[in-house]
Length: 137
Image 1: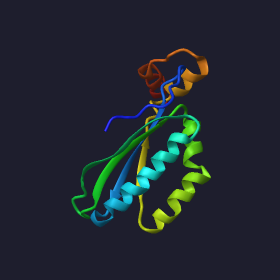
Image 2: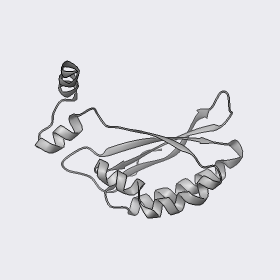
Image 3: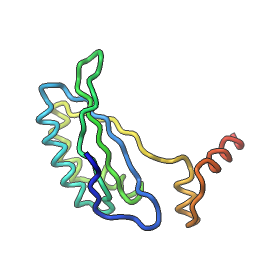
C-alpha cells in the first residue's frame, strides 16, 4: 500500500523507520486493529509525514508466524522519537503487548550525511561522508 502523505519538510528528507511484525496466524485480526489505532494516532502527532499500512511479506519458516512490514516517516529523527516515546503510543501498546504484540524496527539513517546535511544546510553526498568515515577508521 502506498504511503499516505500528510506534511512535507522543505529542508531535509523525512526520517523513515521500517517495522517488521511477527504475528501468530490466529492473531492477525487483533494485530491489524492495533495497527489501525496506532496509525490514526501517529497521523495526529507533530512532525508526521507518511505511513504505510502493514503488508504481509511472508511467513517464518521455523515458527510459522506471519510477517508483516510497515513504514512510518516523520520530519526529523527527533519528531519520530517523540512519537515512539509518547504517552499516547505507550497507552495503545500496553494492552496489545500483554496479548503478544511484538515488532522489530530498522531506521533509514543514511550514514552520517543526514546530520551533516541538516547542520550545514547544504546537501552532502552520502558516499563522500561514508568514505571519509572509512578513511578515518
